[in-house]
Length: 72
Ligand SMILES: [Zn+2]
Image 1 (cartoon, helix red, strand yellow):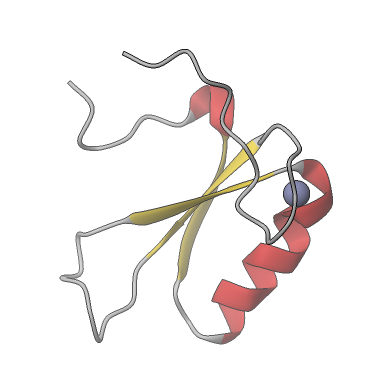
Image 2 (image 1 turned 90 degrees about the horizontal axis):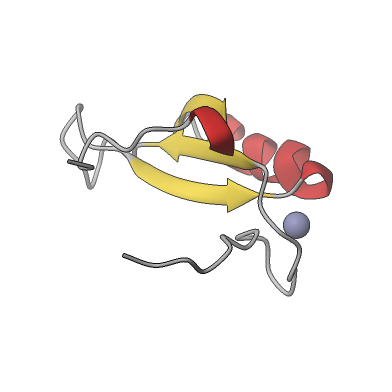
C-alpha cells in the first residue's frame, strides 16, 4: 500500500492530481481495458483534449471518486 500523493501526468507538472482520465486505445487495448492518466485542475482540459481528439477518452472522474476496476 502506498501513501504517495498522486501527481498530475502532464509533462513537467508536479502538482497533486485531482482528476482521473480513463482512456482506451482500440488499436492496442481490448474494449474493456482502461488506461489512466492523472490530472491537476490546470491540466485536466489539456489532457482530455489530447485523448479526446484521438477518440481515446472514456471517462473523466474525480480522483476521490475513482475506483480502479483492478482494485480489490
Ligand atoms: Zn498538472
